[in-house]
Length: 294
Image (cartoon, rainbow, N blue to C red):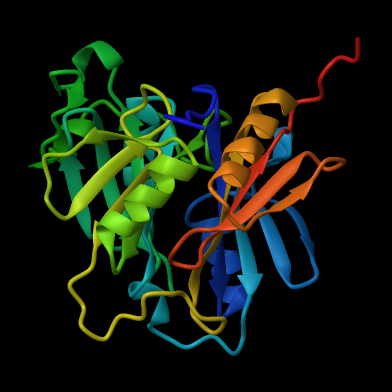
């Protein structure tokens, strides 16, 4: 199949990470981030929007995980996007009241963000997307910048308290660190239909299947001792899940993978395709929506 593309309505829905201190990490994501605990069983916690039972993050207990292994190949950071600028401001105020360290604050042109790390040094970005007509574009591609965000300006008119993530919060993107940028990019482009949204950076690509600024980012790590593939005892990212709109779209992906001779898992009944990217990250493509039978 030439120039394969996923349905542009394909959405990034959740990410799961392997954690060493399960109880401590569960407490952090509930009390500091404000996720609801949707389910907990078999050494895994599902967190997200409780009222919708919508998963945003999975925590997988990995007590034999090697400390520090999650800052090599794999997860660079996960972005969670709030629906409004006021929501971001309330979250910033919440962090300050908790005296939780904010490690960075940026205006990227298309969004405003703050960065923190969880207790096991998984980096997290919390953002608000600017209206699309304000995104900096050049020749149809994102022309992103990194300017310092004026925190005080964000807080000037903030009202209310932050108690939990707003209902419309979503996973914006997952940023991965890889050992071979072009090999990983070719995998996502040829097999899954992702396209570059911003190629201004020689060591980073922003990728998406639609007009969103990016659903994935990949950067080439400069670490000499970096393993090219995630190991079983590595902490950090385990799998990333995408919501595919229809069974027809899933079968189109299946056909493309078969044409390219790719290894993958397919379950028609569960309407799911699973495969590993070159870094050993498990990717799930699932048709969540129930389709009307004709």
